[in-house]
Image (cartoon, rainbow, N blue to C red):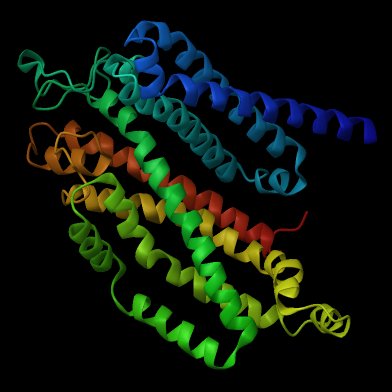
Length: 362
């Protein structure tokens, strides 16, 4: 048993080192300063960017697989067939998003646009009026849009932005909501009143309205959409953390920590945080889908798009609706992708909640 554990630790360390080295290579070569240093010889940088991109993607995928197959909680979660299918879909979605996202970033840094669609079926920005609104076929499985652009290529191109925004928004909500909720629940009194009234203000306003208002104020960009979602999203997490902290703060081990003379900060970081985080993480697994759905709604309304022709799932649905009922495939396939990803998050999150709350015991 110890032999297996040592092999696992050694493999993880090797993969982490390999991942960090390739992240360093990637950011060195996918860099405007490096491009200038080689006198804009773009093609000399491409092999290094491709190698590091492949290496980063494979390293991350390997780390996830090793963690899942060796962790008992994950094994329990994936005994459910719907959860297993959802995990496979989300695993493929995020691995593709990392790979494609790195290529898109590098293409902007080294001024080589072809890199951003090198592994897509077609150039997602190539206008071709002669093949506009073609129905699904072997050549174009999702059909083409009114500009003659391949819809499957545009769906794949848009995947990284939805993965990025859901990850940033949920993680920031956990951090901000965690700080507010844990301090509020543990300290109580005036601190609790002030922090919860501020939280209530954000909860009182409909989330989508607040997101739209912030996004519009900050201007049309992907960053403004991220900030717009981050502003109201933490409030629910603050409530969750507070309710869990109120339960944990009355436990005997917290009293024992106080009797041992531990300060409030030490008690919060050593005994409260890791005992309240499980229930919140289970909710967060569901929440990734909510962020993607909200972001799709924003882009459907044209908010957060610097360029109207930027491939985004929501905007593709919006443009496709104008072609109904003749070109039904135009809005249907991006919609199905959104539904597939959001449903996968719901199935996996629901299973995680069952396992963590003890409703599933084998």
